[in-house]
Image (cartoon, rainbow, N blue to C red):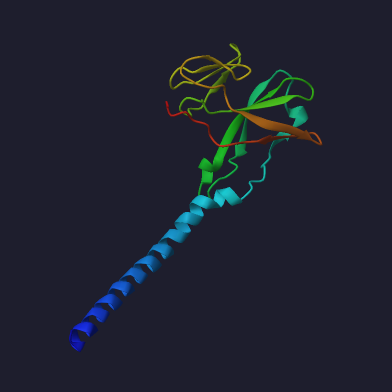
Length: 168
């Protein structure tokens, strides 16, 4: 082999290794934020978010009312869509129960029908009893129940993500 061919081979090896190194560097630059996005929830402990919905005496025993609250994880640009709601029932002097306003079938908003004492979904005919259990229609599960607490006469609800089955 002549010295020219050895130089050509080493130049080829050099350029090959350079391009591989730049490719690995580029993949690391692009892949690190993507990987961090997917792994971040595994390390971050979410603190429970309690939303105040009113004074204890604002709710009559035996009543079911819709209360407005802010989504626990709204995006900074969410605006009005960062608002959500819950159905709050006052069962006894100190017992409150809150349900998601979203049907467990496809997430449509359910309505409370006072005369029938039922939650009804207008989209696909889902019906829920007063206790949130499925009475009829396509919903696969009862309404999602949220944690409720009363502190110093103030009623607070801990909302969760919007539950949906997507027909699966």
